[in-house]
Image (cartoon, rainbow, N blue to C red):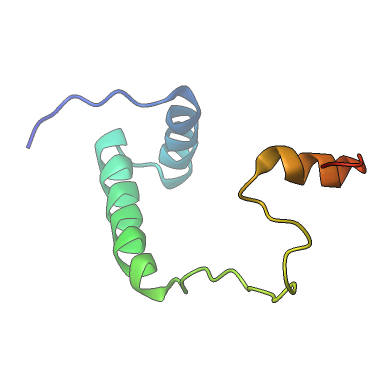
Length: 81
């Protein structure tokens, strides 16, 4: 398959370095990198543990937060009401 890709400069530099190290064509280097990257993307999804946020009981609210003006006044230490 033939297609045109726009490769970012930093990726192009890495590809060129790898191509020189391996003494292979750019086509072979890009295909190898894509194969490895695609395999990693496929397998990583199943291996990654879901992120969980721990919750903590902080007790009852000190002030009713339904009234934001009252909550701000209480937080700022103003004598409200």
